[in-house]
Length: 490
Ligand SMILES: Cc1ncc(COP(=O)(O)O)c(C=O)c1O
Image (cartoon, rainbow, N blue to C red; front, side, top):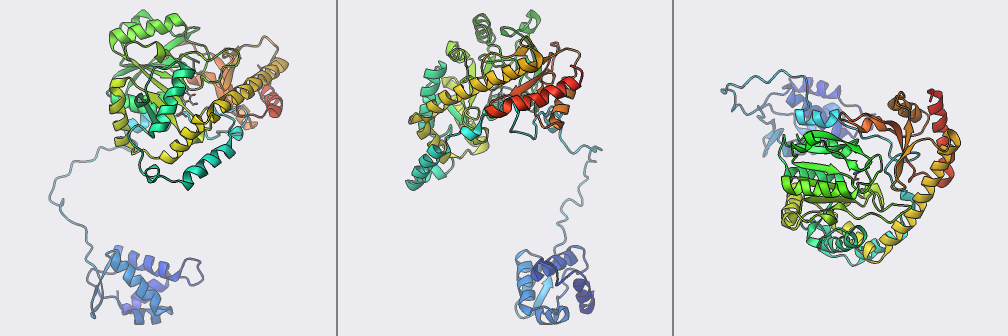
């Protein structure tokens, strides 16, 4: 392209009225000319003075663009001799190599990626009536938190802004160990407590370190889709084991094929809400000991029991170091905090802490330090007590609303505990359709049948989270939901 042609070509691509700065437009246009071979390698570019005149722009703009293109390797500036298009032809080292034909697939995702997304259950709405599993974040004691955070900021220790040490900030591990020992009956020392970003990450780490692709894992049927997805994505073979009133209920045939790990929610079955019986707990622990399988105990919301004291963790009964205990602070403080913990047997403490740092290069020590202060100074315990009262009341209000619209004997699943309950629906009802219609009316629920994945007969119902709905809105929101349910013939 001759200089006059180049100027025309560039002029067509520069608009002085455009809000994009002129130097950026010229830079993009020249870059494009080089990449499209409109300007061949070795070609001398017009002087900055000439190009500026032809385009009617400032010379400094052209100089700035030439300098930037030189930095990026598109042009070379020979001292005194002008600016030349660099020889940026692609490296031809594989020209002589016979390349295998790529497998003809229109699918950009890997098999692992597809396994993850096929089972995806996450919803876009994470707040409001009746999103399950979300704490009332408006009650979070933000003033106390902000005071503790400011104090940490004022007396900043540099290491709190660096990567976190393997396993997390030790003072937080210490106060959590103390809390878990006294409130949950967990047997642990601080070194066994590993700080993670939540239960999802804890399960992911346990799966990576204790199982191999193809190993079998038992999940409860029904169960929480999120941790199922984590396991599924890792290539584990999932076997869904039906639950009964005492918790996970493996048959003799199941027991004859020991899994590598089992994922259970003994304190509060998710989503149905029952508590695993003592007999079932003892059976599971003994089975894990004899078969050397792992039990992952998901203790996601056990702080919130309204009619009785919280039940001790299964981990506290484990004499054989087969339980990996996982918990979350998101259900107590706020989900976006993304802090959870896992308690591993002593022999696994060091490997787990190192693996976590190796994989994710954890940080957030400053936040962990604030959290440790928050727990140590008693704000955490006080917040749990306050919220237990709030949620107990909201559950009661929701139960009253259910009785008003459906009668006092309408089936409701779930102990007096946690952040949600399940409104039972008759077997012939399509609860997924009901949930869709409810969402269209502004009410978020989750269909119970979607939590099943095995052969267990799928009960129908709607998971209703009451924790993040203000007292005054529970009755009106439920009235909208009841109207939707009734309109579908229930
Ligand atoms: C049973 C169960 N386990 C784990 C989680 C997620 O925990 P985290 O937010 O700590 O990853 C949830 C969230 O709803 C849950 O219901």
